[in-house]
Structure formats: C-alpha cells, structure tokens
Length: 283
Image (tube, rainbow, N blue to C red):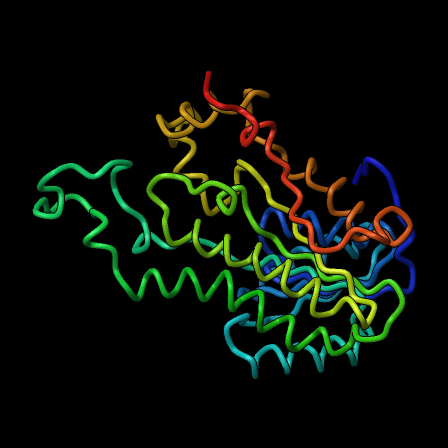
C-alpha cells in the first residue's frame, strides 16, 4: 500500500468496525501499514477475515472478528477476543453504517398524488422500521462500540476515537432522509463525545466522505455496463473536481486525525473529504 505519509503506530491496537467494507478495509490496511495491530470487525466474518488476511500477507498484524454493532453482547465478546489476541484498544474507528431502501424515497421532489402511485415510495410511504434500522445502524452502531471499547482508552496516552460521518450530515441529499439524518446524528455525537472525554485524554473526531464508490452504492452510481446513472451525472456536475473519490484519498485525513504529533489539539471536528462538493453553489 502506498501512503501519502506515514505515522508510527507500533505498539498500538486499532479496532475498526465495518472493516470488511471498501472504505473501512482501506482504513484498516493503512493503520496496519503504520504498525498498528488491527482488529477488523464486521458482521460478515468472511469479509473481516479477507481484509485481515490481506494485512497479514503484507506483513502486518490483524485478526478478523465477527461482531454486530447493534448487539452489545456481540461487541463484548469481540472485545474479549481483541484483548486476548492483540491487547487493549488504543484506536477505535467506528466505520459500520449504511442505508436501507425502506428509508429512501423514489423521487427527489414530492408531487400531488405520489402517495397513490403503487410504483413509487413517497415521503408518506417511508417505512418506520426501515428508518429506525438506518438510524440504529449509523448512530447506535457508533455509540454501542464506543461504550464497549472506549473503556480501554480512558486515561491512555494518545487514545483516539474516529467516527465516519458523511457530507449528508452537513446538507441532506435528496431521496435519503433517514441516512442523512442518521449521519447528522453521528456528527453531533462526535462533538458531544469529544467534550465528554476531553478530561481523560481521549480525542474524538470524524471523517465526512463525499462521494466514493462502494459496494453499497455501486448500483445507484453506475449502470451494469459501468456507465454513470443519471444520479451520478448530477452528482459529478456539482462536484468541482468532476469525479468520485478514490478510497485511498481518505487515508491522509485518517492518518492526520489519528496522529498525536499532527493533531494532538484537534478534537471534535468533522473533516470533509468531498472534492469541493459542499463548497460549490451550483453556479
């Protein structure tokens, strides 16, 4: 792996939730490349093991751990395994999250009578369970792992919690009210937690990615033949850099926020990485 710069994480133990995914898999590999022993947590054990195996193949130290970020018992069991095999957690990266079609509208704008059309999901048709799932996965899926693993961080030197928010948290995107609201909650919680833990040596920050192609959103952004969907074309027309981000382009923000040398006084920030999307007025 080629990094924009390196920091020394030798002797540190990093826990990465959602580590089997595209973005958090890259995060896990970058932390391992800098010397951390990494616990790759994911609901899908095979996905976690795949990333851990790739880290070990490159000479790093990692384990794959099956964990449900919405189940405290599952997280407690994961912590016992991490502590037993790697040691006490120094860095917690809360990356688990996602959206659900039941919390998504079909159209960007409501028009009269949309709720009567069986082929559409209007605002009035949003499923409460689907919306709850999205909020729980993103917000509780950040809070619960923090409750479990932050006990290891208290009072340590250079302890770090890094959450994964989204540019949706700053300005909601059309069609996805549940996901946008849930990520806004993650950003707010990041600030709250930064204050709450400020007296015990734990820094808490977040990264807010803009548009990156992942397995979760690939079908929304690209057609089966690889061409852009209409939504992608609209996104890129509003992104000054005119392209999607590459997962590796998040590594610099990750290492900066994790580094005690570079960011020892950075606490409670949500750092956008969006190619200028939020800065562009559209004209």
